[in-house]
Length: 239
Image (cartoon, rainbow, N blue to C red):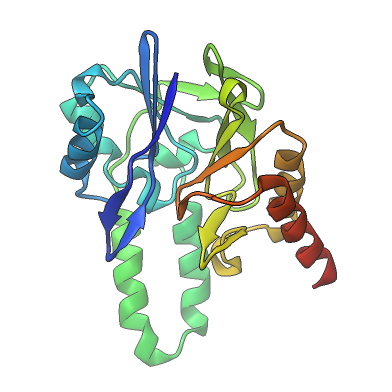
């Protein structure tokens, strides 16, 4: 099995969807911003993979920078099975209003007038993301394929999941953790719907046998994972 950081430049910064290549499966983890299917295709091709060989796309949560190109990918490559948590599937399918849109709409009346046009553009962007049918819902501890396990990591969003590959001592974090400015952190508070629960997820991650963390925002964390996780927990307890 091979775990690849598909670093993709988007919106003047890099994002890091993951590719898991194995015997009989190829899994993409998260589907980037809208309009980036061609960049996903190019990034995969650099690792000798055509998306026609993709078997699964696992969505860690339904923020638009993780599902933006999902509809285009599914239309172009209908063999791909879309996988998400049972809690997140209704939002990906747009049977329920996006939690991020609900948050944005609730904040809107409190914004200064000069900030409201930009906020409305963000609302429209969230509304424009196309629904996609989820082929399979998963829960904590379930195997996507042999050797790739779902870890429920709520906090950033209630249905957030990460993927654990014990054979490689690696966790693909989604937004449960981010690597920014040289430091491992939880996602910024304004985008984390439940910070105390996010910290509980960090504690849970810390109990796994891991040596590598691949963050959607920041890529592979280069330091000692256990030390960094303990630091996050200590900082939260001291705040």
